[in-house]
Length: 208
Image (cartoon, rainbow, N blue to C red; front, top):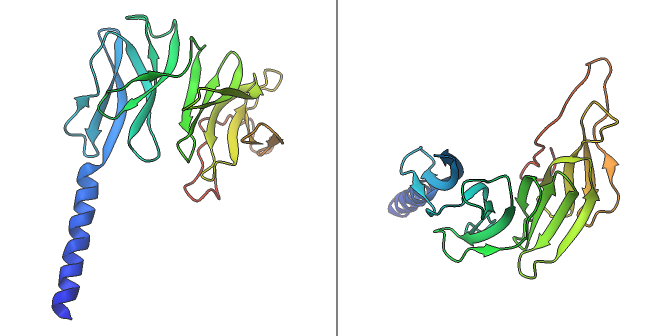
């Protein structure tokens, strides 16, 4: 029994070490006016470019299963502000596929929890989802949206209301199909003016 426990403990430690060793962080870095996508170990070592091309790429995110990457790419060399679009690709940079055609300024890009859709915010037009397989785009909200995140169960979206008639930025929640938008935080005059940015759901979906 003692030998069995020892073996199990060693196996668990090895599994944890392997999982830690395989942990990767993805990020973008600008060099000579071109932004490229890199991955590195979670200890900051082994920084490696995903691919090298003349296009600027930024805002990379892992798919929920870790097998693909979604990102913004500008197909105009050396100018990532002109015609950015959403692309997906394998984690080694292969099989890049363009999903959109000449978007505006995208502020946020998020995978749905099931990995089938992407949520993005076009600062000029509003909040959208796009089906990765069919490329079908649905508008969730029009304008006045700033920063967003998908709930872990995929049923709701939290966002910042950027209504220009309101100085203070508050959190709102909307159903994933665009129904039932409601304000989640409210002004507290005793605490003074508050501006909220970059909301993120907790993994269990109970907090923001």
